[in-house]
View 1: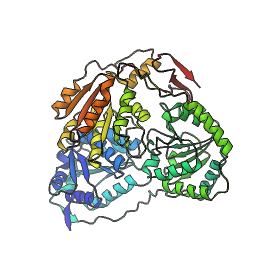
View 2: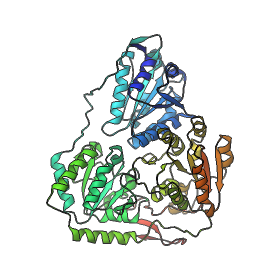
View 3: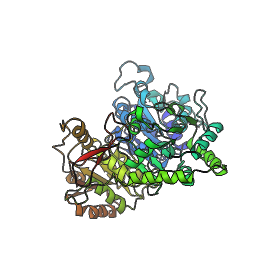
View 4: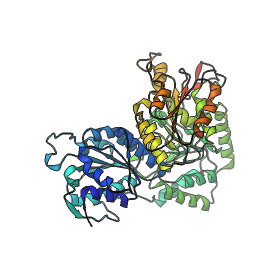
Length: 578
């Protein structure tokens, strides 16, 4: 079978089982778009901005576990996609981006809409390719999917000059069943000796903690993690990216850790003597002041990426491998071992953890006559029975979602953790809804973030993706305002959003339903009304308390156990507990 480059590219996507391509056409990719026109297997989703394409593809991948695919044109098409590519890179999300490029003969001549896409994206992709021969196109696409989905996942970009897709040039097509790359051979199974050593250390711990991250979800290891945790009876905490990797409603779960983590999670980490870190990378939002991070603990670290181990925190037992098979091996050893965890030590440890839980660090003023953002998230959890897919933008609303929506399942919490990208939430919700059209999908956002990619409301209408937008509107860039209050003596420099649109009218202008909610007693009914409208996108504009802050909080330069807490509901006075 002889095909043109454009046809080859589309056929490769078919052979990879790709369902959706998120993109935006332009001159250098028109041959590819013409090939898309002549088939129906691969569905194209026309976004309204290339950043929206990358966020939708990214969220599709996070929700369903398959790589997202993006198609953009050269020049501004590629540069508009960079933010979304970097978002996927920071969170290790498998994605393949196909970018058009000017014809090969004029590369380097500053041709119309030419940029060095390979050079620009090199710092924020797992790998990238520039295709120089149409005969190499199929193998290059196969390599892109292989690299994106194996080892530590990530985005891979394929830059395709326009002449490579010329419909007048046809070559034999054969899609490789597998590829090998001499310089790329990710480790799968961990070192048996290290795993045995880790299990011995775990079973002899007096104050153990299990600390799991996004790698558990990406590695489909949540069942093994849950079984191991419950078998041992040890406390477990998740990172922001790891939420849902262990059931949040289970009593062994002590909440999220880190800058806005729970008091019990952070104090448990600080006082522990053995930590099992699984698929987490010890980022700065978790560790706080590195010199004081977990001073008493021996650390076991399981990660598929050897570069992540001892990168920021020195570990005692490094295990390089995919988390699922490593946890399976650990489970076998724990079950076979004659050594059992000390019952007395574990009871004493849980008593201490319970004393930290009794601080009730997530309490807030429930008698307020102004809508509290925490209350909205709690009601969203109840109205959806904890079963919704929840996307978020970045800021206070993201932290409220992480703190108050209890995720019992993996791949239900879809947010930009590493890069912290405003504008992620709405296109992400569309990507999730395409993956799971019958599921409830809610986007928790704020009035600043939602305006970054609000044009994707048009995409939601065109492709019939009825998502529910929960806008926690406090007329501030909330997290910026909070930092300015705590660290800049309440000098609110350019964080107040004094001119924002009427979101109800804006939603209606895009063909959707808009609801404005101003009283606490209206919150639940508004949410129920929105989710009863199964076939409509609903924009819920909740007017919330603009002075509310996210607690607990670890301020810049402080140790992870040195948290700013609220004293009591409705009390503005704060104190530090350490």
